[in-house]
Length: 629
Image (tube, rainbow, N blue to C red; front, side):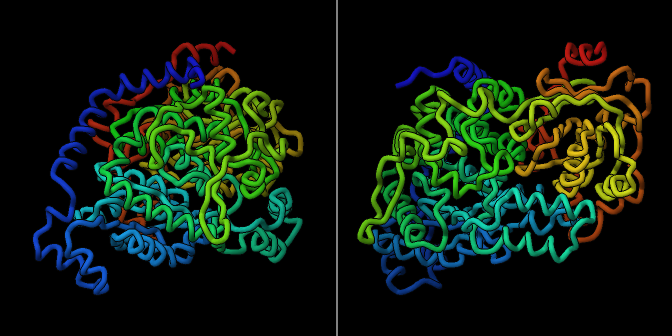
């Protein structure tokens, strides 16, 4: 077994020690649930009859025997999400596979699934992050029927997989397998899509041209092909050991995809019969570290700086941004996938894909090889790739050398010696920045602030030419308490245009940018947020701000923010975030949500899972260094 990188070992040991009480408490609860016995033995005859009243005669006969496992399917199907449209047929595939294995399967319940691509720049985006915890709760509702011996979770996209993950861990005494749907075939090149978006931001092409470009990008069932949050989810589920190996990026409209879905159901039956592979054992401190490293090594979504904290907490594991930053410092960047390169996930998979990444990270000692997975002990299972031979699913070793080193490289010759995510901090608070797509010459910015409360105000200033200068665009009151922490992609093309004009440009916000964070340096998720007393509420137009991810600094220069009163959010903007488009239904969420670094969670927002364990203050030495500069 390769020697584990000492920083990975150190961070893991720190997480284990920090999590000692919460992890032990979680495992006690899961052990107690397991010791009560299998679900079918606990339900009364009336309970069991209700559970199978709508099933086929054959399934009823199997269930009446009381000896065979029953799989619970939790699905995020809807046909608005291209990535989730294929799930319409998956329950039938799973039921047939379970029957062939002498077991049964039922759809236990459905969970909501928003498409962030549809709600970008719209009021609905203010419900997007909150939907993750709602999905976790919905998963709990589905599985609390307690009629299941294993779970198959169907989800792909941004908040859906984290929510399913969190909800399933509440039933971690059961085996849980995630069955994805895969990406759509490649459309127009990503660079061309970005070019047209930039032209539209400058009014150089019309809306019809933009629409034709977007349709050329998003054109069929399957995940969007850039490496955003959805595809980052899939990478992490592989390295967490919750997928069958190399299933993340197989196209949905193929026989291989259906064969993998059937194999996932069969494997869930096997685990249930053997009493092995419970999710509480698969997901532990080591597997969480592996997920973080996989994200960093591939330049994945910044959304997971939030999601991973909440996901880990659902297993009793406590992590923070310092852990991620230190892991990033020793994680080789192995992949260049859009927006961190020009290739899409289909090209990434063709070059070697997840199996190559897993093998390289394990061989370099960057991940824990001795983890438990749904395939059995050891990460080596995930060095394999599936294929169909005469209609039969077979597994073979993945490639040992990249087939395209412009997309995927070995750990011995990475694109960068560090991962793509860094922690920055100072008198403005703590934030994260994704630098893997930012050229080194654009990373350090010191410029006057231009302060806004909405994307629309910032975009109007861009259109008016008021941002044609060196500038740090500050967009505040975008945190989870203020308005649900929406993604702020509408600003990306405009900021890119300013940078292309030769200006020094940076973006600072307590909101999110997600997996599409691009070529402009953006310090995001600033915590504490402005509405909760964060120092962003004290910044004024013209204040000099320094963003330096190389030194880990986000701070004002020559300004004493503590001497100023905080700015109040305008009544118009506050009211707009409270009502309309379903936002009035989530008032309790905005009131109770934890901070971004605590996972922006409703499920884990109290003393057990919130500020009592992960409230981090900026390092005063960094604040002093930034002010002295």
